[in-house]
Image (tube, rainbow, N blue to C red; front, side, top):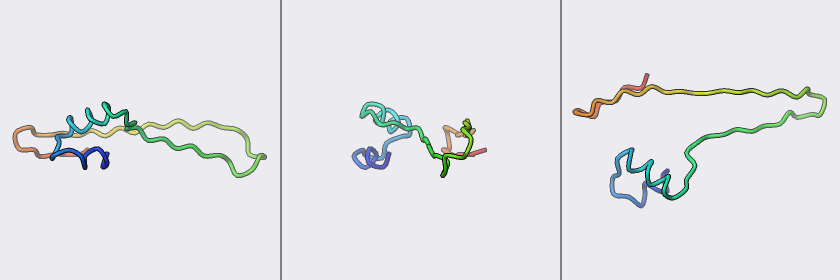
Length: 65
């Protein structure tokens, strides 16, 4: 996102996310790892993270919960 925002003049969050989409930038995070030995039994782990953000559109105050 820093590369995209550097070419914009103080973009809003919506404008920045939109421009990332236009340029085909993937805004997701992924992690893949493998066990160190073949003796380890195969397993899968799934996880999700959610952040609730409250924004006061009049004052710009943000609360991350």
